[in-house]
Image 1 (cartoon, rainbow, N blue to C red):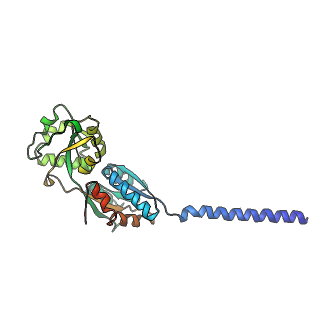
Image 2: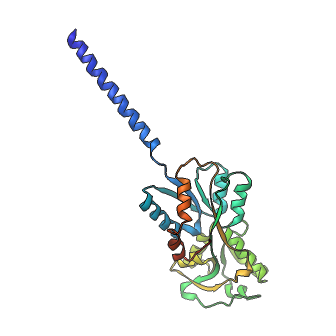
Image 3: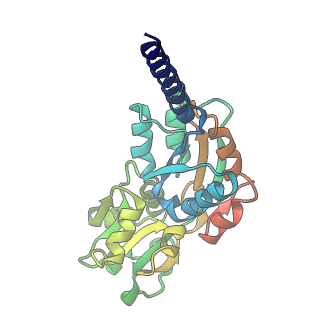
Length: 264
């Protein structure tokens, strides 16, 4: 009887210990900081990858980032996708979410500026004087003009606005190859599938397969502004710290290296 009692006590002690260890193991992930999930415009990839690496190095916290057209990301957030941070390539898609109460009040700010440029395949690049009435249709010939989709992708919207302002949109409208993102448009030129494309200057700098042949006048399109904010549904306690880091002086060199203008 005593032996059985001792065995029972030993089993009970082991079981309680296992339960305690299980409770500790179960609570550890909850106590650990979650990854900050970022939805960011495709044109930010090179710069933001570097910023995120620095954030992880300094804070010990991790991030996970989805890059796509701002329109696609905004729609995903609207549909319930679990994002903590949204960085748009234009003000319109940030406003779209803000109007639907999907952006946390008081967290939105304008982070970066950019320019749009005309790029050509590396081997065929010659300077183009981008001015009122310039003959882009003749440059294209039978080729296509690669752009982000002009009804949704910010770079495409900026490009169309510039071409309209310069009086050449009607002559090239039917030659446009609309892409799902500015990086997809860049790839069409880089692979030689389109002789020219309109992309951000930061994208052009990231692809050795293209050359900038002209820069669109700043007054030919609305200012290119990248806003950043925390989403309304984010419950991640690290989101605010990440937002502060991206807006801090520590992040500036990484953005400027890729050609972005950091807005103060």
